[in-house]
Image 1 (cartoon, rainbow, N blue to C red):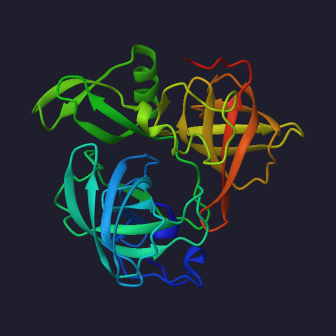
Image 2 (image 1 turned 90 degrees about the vertical axis):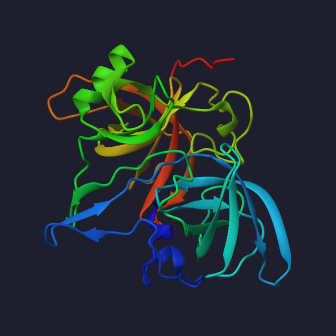
Length: 312
């Protein structure tokens, strides 16, 4: 989950806004101080109903959506002004599951148009989102390198179980080539064929693929998106390069976070799925939107691949 819903007292996203201790994106020490155990975040737009009391103590009910989710909670869009530490009842409108959540943060800089809040699920044993988030061990480093691993939303072809799975680049390339990958399914209790879990059509409007104030038409990516995080090499017109990580992608565009200051309309080349020594082709692209991200430490960019055609 983005740092904006980490419960760190000195986090820039929370300064002047307030935060409460939480297990959302909790970092648990594992095998000494050099390693951490956590779950990955995912930019997934899931429709939800939120009920509770606003800061004036008046009851409210609002239909909205998530911006980012992980196993423990979410960052959500919410017009109602709520109080930190208050409980709200959230219903996942995709599976009709309801759970109590605790409000843990007001995000200072929203990614999209409406105010955004961090909430923590108070029934962690419930698979509220309908997506499994396996824990993974990550190395601590003052200057962390971009991992050559991949995190992707996958779906079992037999039972429909969904998991934000951790893959190697070789696994990803096999899946991208054959469109299926054999791996164990906890629900089927045996190895099954898994495929990419495309972001559903109803999730398009508020997703990381398109900002809330984007103009309709050519800049609206209608192609089905993959919620997938993998290395991408960015090469700018001046020849400078950066290794970044995608947040989602489709046939027509890519969303990634970067420390670079790129303006709308900037032209660049992207090599998606890049690894040292690989022959991944570069594709010309241009920036169509940008948003401040991770307390201003990076920027979230949406780029359109040159020559890509919209799908109906």
